[in-house]
Structures are given as structure tokens and as C-alpha cells.
Image 1 (cartoon, rainbow over the protein chains, first blue to last red):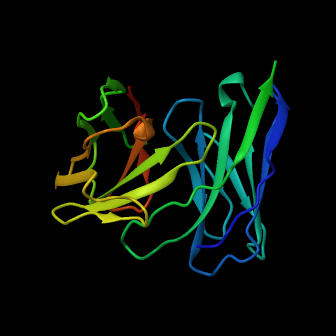
Image 2 (cartoon, rainbow over the protein chains, first blue to last red; image 1 turned 135 degrees about the vertical axis):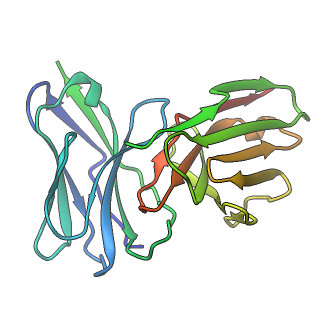
Length: 113
Length: 114
């Protein structure tokens, strides 16, 4: 699975949009981009995933560049509860069977009041 | 989203005893379950992958005789830490995946071995 690069930490003001970048320049055509977050002392929480089209759900939006070498997770109106470590993970998909997730260091997002 | 539970949420045990952790998918059938371990200030590390009715596949460096995994049904997997030692103290997290390939994680089990 392709390696990802994320900033170590970011701050965001409460109520503002949080934009978390992720580089995955070696991504292959059959690899999806997944985003999870882990609030302190809890299990990771699935946020969103995509292949090449932009995706949106009730939690966030995922913007994938046309060349698929990078993506941005957008939390439209960050709250204090969004403070967590955010993981961008690239993984082969479409095979019909689950594959492991390889977690990097992620981005510590701190939402400030 | 799909719900995965773990029990217990935390456990303290004496060195040399065995501890069993349960992982359940509550609203879907999990054909594959994963077990991860996370040490303080570190990221999650995969320990093993288990498919229902099959033997688990362990990652390099993870002792299969020490970390026994059973995935006897489509909604339950168990991890037993045998003869636990203080260095096994960690945060153990399971995840489950059904027909779609997204993994959903349990809340984790914190193990402290004295």
C-alpha cells in the first residue's frame, strides 16, 4: 500500500473549517484513500473514503486531486469534539475482501475555543 | 455507521495470568476481524487478521502461541493474552469488516499487567 505524508499537528479555531492535507504521491490506480480519526483513549473512528471522485458525508468532505497524488479532508465547522489524531491511509480496494490498514503518525488536530 | 464493541474496556491482572478480550460486531456480520495494539504515544500496529472459521494470520514478530485468536462466528472474535507479562500492557483494539471493505473499530481494551 502507498505511503502517506501528513503534517504532525494543526490548530483550528472552533466553528471554522479544518482542512487536513495528505500526500500520497505513489498511489496506485486501485488504491483508495481512507480517513480515520482517533480521539484520545478511544478506538479509531471511520470518517470517509474515496477513490478519485470527491466525497461528502455527514461528517466531512474528501477532496482528491485530479492526479490523485494528494487529498484534503475538510471538517466544515470544527468543534472542540473534533480534537483528535487524523489518519490518512491508502489501501487497495475493490477486491471484495478486507485488507489491513497501515497507520502512520497522523495529524494531531487541536480545535481551539 | 456499523458498531463494534469490545469487552472488557479495561483490565488489570497479575503477571502470569491469561486475559481474554472479546470483540463483537453488533449490527453486521464480520467476515474479517483485525487485532491491533497501541503503546502510549504510538500509532496502531496490526497484530493479526482473522477470517471467520479460519486460523488467524499473525504479523511478523507477534507470537501466535501467546496471543490466541478465535473467530468462531461472524459476530465474535476473541483475543487471549496468555501468561501475560508487564510488557504486554497496552491498548488492544479490534476492527471488523463485512461485505463492504471499510473497517469499523471497537472502543479498545486497556490492559495493565502488574
